[in-house]
Amino acid sequence: MNDRMKEELIEEIELLRSEVDELRQKKDERKQVEEVLRENEEKYRNLFENATDGIFELDLVGRFASGYRKAEQICGCSREQAWA
Image (cartoon, rainbow, N blue to C red):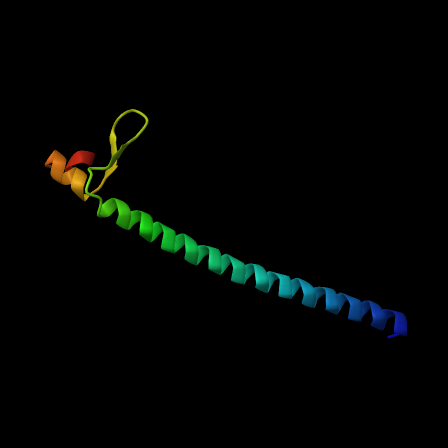
């Protein structure tokens, strides 16, 4: 192996190391974003599940799509009954 080939190999190795470092950083960032998303989903779910108002969602044709505890109490039926 001549000096030129060694230099090219070293450059390629350095490039690969840099790309591995970049992938690791992106993986760590993704984990952080996923954790924030999980926390926000939990906050959203808790907000609606424990709301004092009846909150429900309808689909585009007016059918029951989802509802929360207080909506069940106000309507007098469970989510399963409303979906039927």
